[in-house]
Length: 301
Ligand SMILES: [Zn+2]
View 1 (cartoon, rainbow, N blue to C red):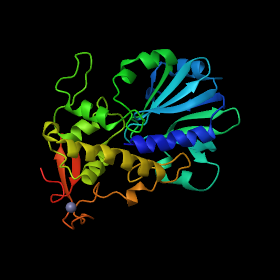
View 2: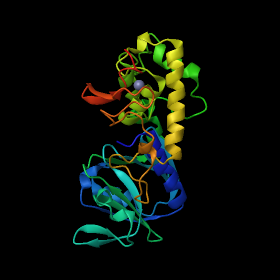
View 3: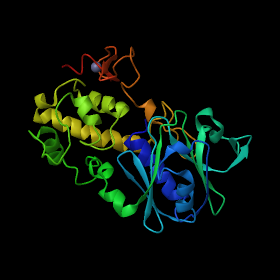
View 4: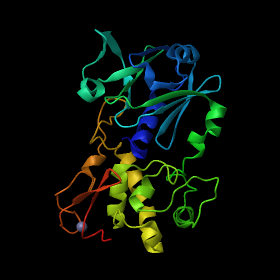
């Protein structure tokens, strides 16, 4: 699933490519992907003619602020990724007009496509079809449980070590806050209500870098260990954005090209390979149905 660096890469691409454009047409062969409004014809009617004023990210959500105080939310979920280009409909399938990365198989599962007034197109390629598309009144979205329940953005300046420590060590969250801070560190890091944007790949990389076992209980982490995790979050996310994300699975940039962070990853999907720090073999184990990759020597429980 695209995580913070991948979603941020997409958002930065979109800011360069589609700002100021007007949505002229919407096509879909999987109308259930649009969850709000549920009726696709209604969605089409409401979105047509609106201008893209701003593209931003909140957690793993891509938010398109449109003219007339509407916001289009796209959560790419497991395999979804947004592409910008020119396609022609050929026997029910969208074929890119230009040869190149958009022809790669992973970029051809297009089930939703917007055409802009300058003929450029924005397509959602999504093999598993889990991506979520919603059209909101901007104000309503900001007040929604969906947005309000998200934890802080780890790359924001106000996400300081003090704040991070407070989030992870607070004995009991206020009752109005549904944040779960107890439990194993990997799981807590991946909980979007605790911190926004961390998923399976980067939680493994962050914990390897901080030399913390993924199953270590949060309540057992000392100040120094928390500090290392905090630093690793900032450093790894910054580096991953520089390298345009990880394309080990379906994620591609809006040009259809891959990101390069997978070359730098140290443990994720490297089971059986040598730990770059100590030479021991990387292990893979299951945690709540998800796999965790770690070095048994560098990351002791
Ligand atoms: Zn090691």
